[in-house]
Image (cartoon, one colour):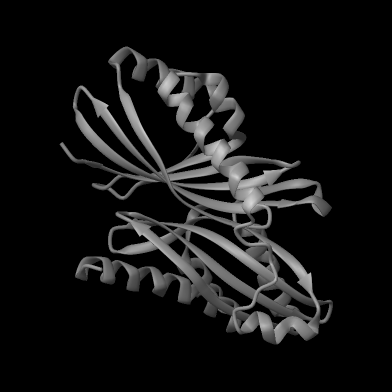
Length: 277
């Protein structure tokens, strides 16, 4: 790992530290520091009607309410995985929550982006299960019982990602429709102004993009580099090489997926793009 990569990793870990300490210390300032104000939350919770999405303010309000009421809740937090490329990263972050109702084993998938010198969370998704109190010690020692990188699920995710790639190889909007949730968002940061865009990407916009690529005869090489799945949530890293009239560009996509009604769909896309030729 280069010195620059080590520096960036330390900054990402600092953001994750703020996130964990916010709950351990009931410190709202640290929670706000960790998250971009325009960040989004996507979870699939069947008992709450399915897809749950919105800004993080809802659960921040709940966080403040529980603290004010003096609710006895104990949080164990630590990161399990960090993967970073350029100005984008994801972290698999573990929450183990002890409360009077029982114990929850939670895996957060956090997408982070770099703003000037700081890294902020721009998307939060994940999965949880209620566990027995007698399993708590094992979970805290890294023996989580949550279904992680299940072969059948990974194969299903790979198929979705291949359809996503084929949509651009073939300029096929129907394949975009098969892979993206209608409420999916695309994250980007202007490297000059650090302005953050967290935008819905409707099918009409994807059609315009595909039409432009076809007109310019842009060709792609794609590779699925990594899939990290827990329960009904996952993050994938894909590499794209784009051959365009303006040069050759390498893009790394960090894609958040949720399994909704037995179908994996992309709900968030963040990327790092660099000109390589």
